[in-house]
Image 1: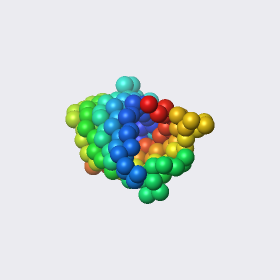
Image 2: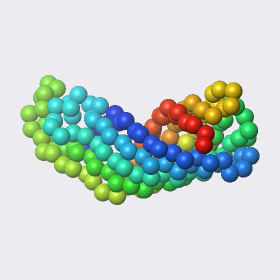
Image 3: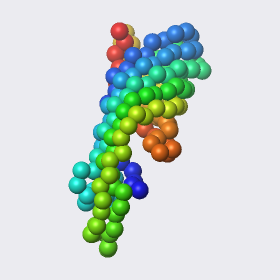
Length: 155
């Protein structure tokens, strides 16, 4: 029905260390975006919005007492989404000449898996920078991959 949407994802996270090899993370997430496909961008009101909460357990195979942390996570999420798209589209030579708009919306829940890599910055190691790659089940049985830059401060 429709293609990929390039999205911005903003999250506020609390991630305590539970032991030398385990941690947890809880996040409140907001996502918004527009279609990536040039054909879909010709249509009015094409966007994606979602808000949800995530909970994840993280295993740190090399320990949590290092300056650089590597973690493998698994968890779940639940929330609400709205994807404004189309149910019918006809195009000739890359130009849309007929379409019917349609909105998909509703509750959204599932599982997620992640790889995490971050490093402590500064002598007191109060700040961390890192990257996270997440795979989760998507809308209508698809798969969604996200890549995040993490900026954090230790409390």
